[in-house]
Length: 369
Image (cartoon, rainbow, N blue to C red):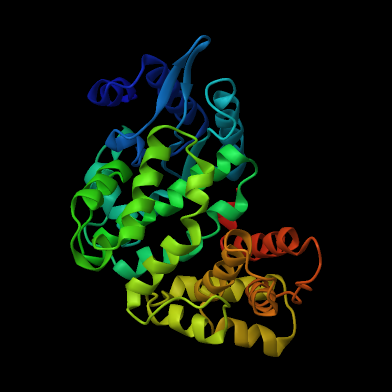
């Protein structure tokens, strides 16, 4: 039934991981009906899963990521999610989780053409089911990788402790080689393989940058030996991401203070919004209405660009010692469709983070589960 042993034999993963994956598969079969299968995604399916031996046994350091394709009832999915949480207890660090995205079986015929989906087609692993990977796309839209980067700017800001922060920062900085290969129209699978390629190839508009090279080197070291050096990574957040963003469109340095011009700049290199995305945003407005004029204006804007500009401002405050900014507060309020916060409040950063998070989960309800 489960192919967990095949995966663990392929990458010399510990037997304890095979046991855990077998439990995941068994529970899925028992609790989710109808079930088409489970696909594991890189990094676990590309050999990048990390663990270590301790006196008490094996400790998992990487998350288990993947997709579940089923048409089970929502209460069954809820029970399965709770069972996955129970499976994690005592098996990994404080942030270890089994992060499976639930999709209808029909979704297999309309998977988005993103880098991550093509990466899964090339290097994913079918834990359960047959022929699922064949239905994943083989071409991707590079603009979708840029959009994902803007959403990922939240990662270091949302960490709960120092260890989680270091790993979140490393994950974000490892988007540098992902963007480099995506912009070239090539999908290289696995963060370690992409980083090693990037560090070896010093050509092109990304590889020739010393700050990007050093940031990727530090991020890869942190991912291979978690949690990594927080102080070292801290110094790369603003300069490296600023250099990356400026090289994506060649329009010069990123501004220290985000404004409407930055939103327009980021909007210019985002992919076209599909009809389903527009419909979802309309539903967001109908679920929680504000002023009609404000809602109409919000519907016409690219929320990822607004959020990306706001997060850039937050990163400036948190990691470059920039002063609190009215512009950042205004953008976060616009993104979340709430009144702007007073940037002079002592708890501005914390409250702004809550406001941004609320706006994000309103736009992407599935991410809140």
